[in-house]
Image 1 (cartoon, rainbow over the protein chains, first blue to last red):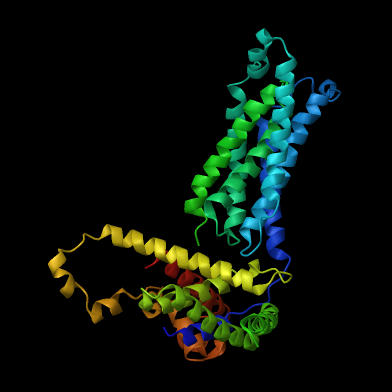
Image 2 (tube, rainbow over the protein chains, first blue to last red; image 1 turned 180 degrees about the vertical axis):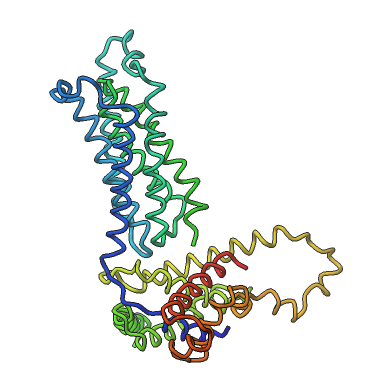
Length: 213
Length: 187
């Protein structure tokens, strides 16, 4: 087919485009992923039994604010990666900020703790369960985030996949924080971050294949 | 005018046409695509001087990509940045899948290389959208060819093919989607 014929075909297929629609579809799917992570946590794990009392502890809120801010930064980064020609800007720095903050906080806690207690602060009681649970809870959110990205046009596929995974992991970590009984920053700094990194890496690998267009 | 002013003027004209097209104006869209294809051709020709036969494939692939992703253009964005990102992505994707395809081929003996290259082979290697069109389901193809290429109305096509008008419209839309999917997968 000659190019001018193709142009005639394409021009005849024109339909009005609603400029807000692609963003609405994108955000709806991502919000849906976060809700699914929360629902899966409630269904299969339940909130911690002392959730009302725990709300008085600052650490309970830190465990929520950390993944929430990470999810927000990942969301902004993913959106910018999904529209051709948009610049990433400071989105990666915004994603690095909550991680750096929790690492500094955890470092201070470990430095001030007696040497014999440090390992216990890091491992807590649930160090195996935590990253695995976060990774499992993130799976539906990752699928939805990749789907949302596929409907747009990402050009850096691995990076976009990683951002989708980061969002899914952070949303899952938020949900898991309502179940998780741990109360120490070093635990969060290691196992939450690891749990979030599992879907991030998975997203980067899947992104290369699934996000092509 | 220097190149910068010229580029700015082009950006403004193309952007205006494209925004009209996004609002549903087919005439503006046709003008936009015609102008865009000329720019794309120059863009690819400059970067594909080793593979001149692939230039037109890439132009068509990029036009299909622009069409299929026109919902990802934000009116507040410069159009140049959007188009350039799409064209560059298609270029890299094309080169990557090409080198992958070539890696699969067993290299010929050195002394046979002279005979391995010929004009007909170069023509065969070029993907022809016509061939892609042939691989679509017959009814979809018929609807597309009649309405879009032969210029028949939807009602005439419906009458000639025995499909309802609604299914002619759906058929055309689907076959365009299938067409871009097939181009994408490199068949």
